[in-house]
Image 1 (tube, helix red, strand yellow):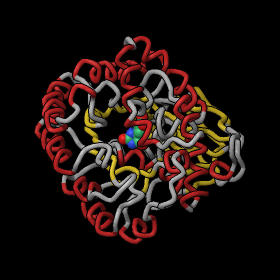
Image 2 (tube, rainbow, N blue to C red):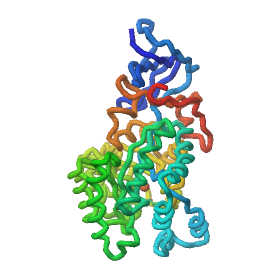
Image 3 (cartoon, rainbow, N blue to C red):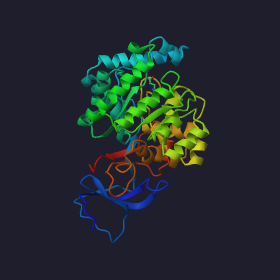
Image 4 (cartoon, rainbow, N blue to C red):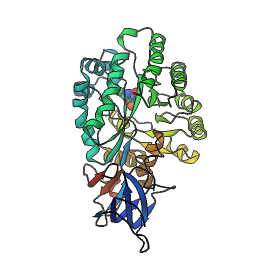
Length: 399
Ligand code: DI6
Ligand code: FE
């Protein structure tokens, strides 16, 4: 007898447990108090106590999708800069002229916490509508102590308005604010000083940085990571997006949860990530929107056994994307990921990239009962279709 309050029966499971998709035909999921108590075949000998029994009509169930890299909280948008880029300006030119990240910084500083939440909810709703149950949200548009903390508080409050799990990341080292022009090391001192305060306030689950020519050097990121580990926070890094600086190897040396983007990562970077257990988070939306041509070294990632995760990178400058299903399609179309790699990328491997794989990411007894139920007959449809949403229902904590 399986003790439970709810069962979903007549389902096909994609558990993502083990190495592959983990298909179980004619299966049952049972949940008790929001956690999975059984996920497996419907066997005549297994009985369930649940009063609430839901017939899935042969639909597929996957773990709820996890968007493990977003800049969802921000104010305003950069549609005007997009139009400028279509007229010939480059991302770097716009940034040097005071646009880019700094223009979103201004809008974000000017917004109240309530306004930030109000502007974020439509983006969050778009993710939720396609089966997202966990979302990571970064700061990085406040670029001073008060406004970075404001962004993180706004992110922490999203679950008051929507049924979603939020993981927060402090990205103070995203861009140089105008107050510190000519003094990036002074700004890094300031970022390092914020880390223990945010950690003890419980506002940040991890620390990230933008390691890039237009961001921060590996030496500066090294200092940010030292402050993070002193405060007991795990790290992750925007690395090798536009150029090869060795950021991914640096992240691996610090035992980072993930290194993200990675278009310009080398074989040595990938080997270092494999040895450290650092997840590769690929962001095909940014690759597409920036019309990049250098592909991330996916063959090396496969050869070294680096887990690959996928995310929207939802941000106003380089990936104004709020469709996890389109991420799956882009990962397959642009990066040639397989259906299995794409689906694992937004479930089990995304959970690893956030360090919460003991809690979510697979359909297994003991995990939170976060499910996405899909109206498809073939799981590959989730990756194959463009602009079509076959989500039947979404279950969070068994509800
Ligand atoms: N990498 C990116 O692609 C975004 N941030 C980052 O570190 C760009 C963010 C923006 O342009 O607003
Ligand atoms: Fe990003």
